[in-house]
Image (cartoon, rainbow, N blue to C red; front, side, top):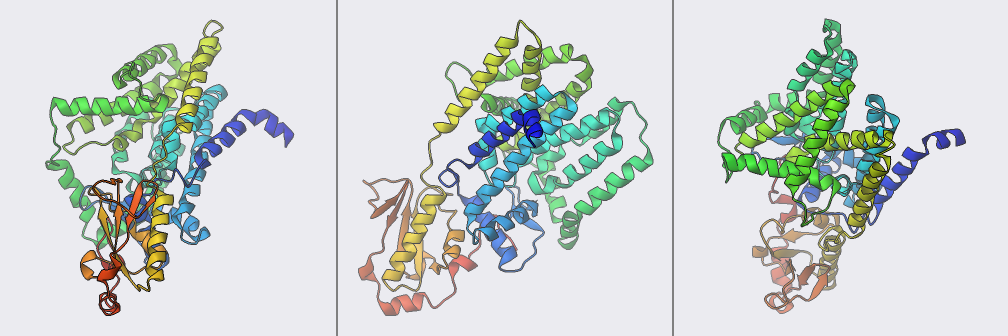
Length: 492
């Protein structure tokens, strides 16, 4: 036991620190919004309604859904916490620790122990990755998915074709469950086979194909039952104008900007003296240096370059508006380059101190970023508190139901319905003549004076004098609108 700890203390320490950063103020920093509320609704549909769903939420592209895997993964955590969504923060923590250790093992296989330690350290301490692991949405695993595919392709390049293809089969069967953009690196499998310079045996492809087909059964079954709805929607989205507000060279510049911003965010907070593009150019210089320096790894650098190029070209010409998270499939690249660069510095007596300084600065900056993060006072704790207060006040006044209205911008009125259900509340539409409680965000005492505040949220109580027992009983005699109204992104 002690020998194991002595031999592996660096990664053990990194895992412990990574655990801390992902658990610290887990409730205060739980960004509870529509996506998390929708996830709770889907979990409720599976657990309470007994509906074994094949799909999760509908994506921003009409007719395309997220697969159910990430939602089923959340079920044990909901059950352990009495269906309270706070449980999934611990799922995010467990996944984050798995990612750190996974990166360590991948780098240990591909490069060296020192590079593995550096890579795990970067993922464990990077503010960008910490926040990603805390964000409980289906796209959360995308970044680690990129690391895993890089490992699979490297196995193919190194001649372990069967093993690499099996890993690819598992990973690509998960694309539907995470983000369809992950399908973009598929051609790299063929490139890896070419770079391996080995003849592919038929038996090497049989097991991977079988695994892929078995794991893709939910997608195939859904498509068959719904007349290939998603297939048609995907083809339509790729062949028709998705009406982005920018196009042409402006779209290329935006894609370049977003990729640069993502890379920048891995290492540094926004600085007036540095632009996102500066970091991109720096990473490009590091890539070029390592490409010529590490001749044994040159094939892997070719794969990384083609991987980046595929993403850059596709999103530069895809007519849908590009968001940062679409590009998370290439976020492994700066971590690989940074880890190999610091290792190169470490191996040089002249540059070792310089490498240590760079790594130390990275760690200090990201620790400061984490501890100075402003707490959004409209998250899980505040929303749960305001829902609890509405229920308490309604019960004190003998209201069997109530209505909730919102004074806020479009979209910020979402993210409460699962919490209403969790409190077993009968919530109607404001037009129902039920007593109306109003949630205000952001606070504005001049325009919308509130009766009570919960962080950044405000609550206006009903005008009690307007309601009689008879009118309330009539308004509450109908169905519970919280259960029957449609929900954006949710479908049976």
